[in-house]
Image 1 (spheres, rainbow, N blue to C red):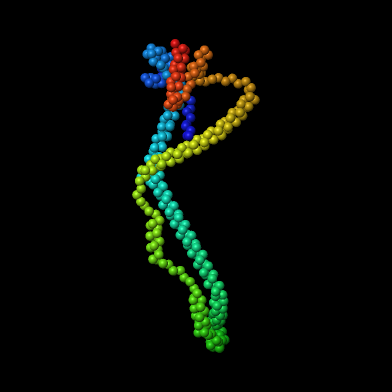
Image 2: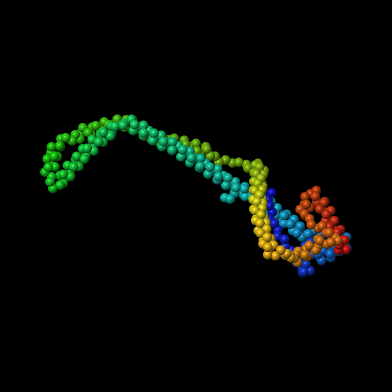
Length: 339
């Protein structure tokens, strides 16, 4: 249910009677002629002479009916175009977009799988690091302290030998030279590191398994030939249903906007009326000339010409006969009025 655009009420001047608006239309198959009130009188007399009925209706109703027909027909052609685009082979095809969407979903799934796997792998490595560190609490720490002590002592001796008063430093170095057990400390470090590295771990990457992973990925996504012609009816029905739902949503949104706009206009009109009443309680209003000309055709005191219609009913099958009867009744009334 899609709301159709509203037609602004407007009337064209009659080319024969320039002061009159074209307000009527004869829908007889041999006529289909726009008429002003003077043309209508002449036209009905012509039909009387020909012995044919004058199917007269308002130009507003005819215009609205034709506009609705054209608008609805355009919507149907747009629907067919959308169906064609859905199955076309271009980049804007909905079918191609759907295929690309599936590929993007494959990428997303694989990226998520790889990220989850790597996160779990890093957590496992971190866990092993903490376990290995806890298994060797003080071995390296003690050796590290011994090395720092020796290195600091040698650093002081080195600075003393570089100073101007180096004799004392020479004596210290000569007396402590045999105190630095480099060989023994190095042996302790080797033994500690061997014990430390005996329970160490590493990451082993099986490149041969990667080929198997690649083979599995090839099986994960398969490009194969399909016959979508068998699914054409289902696809097109789905497209039409989606378009119908979109039309209903659009109609509801437009209705809501119109209601809000109407409420605002009513409020503004109410405020203006109050202001006018305060300034001038009695305000004379005149009807525009074009409205007077238009209404004079319908509001004859002795001949109420009920010409208004809803021409859409003429195309609704069983209602078409009622519409023809109504046009004939209009014709009889116009005969009585125009003679």
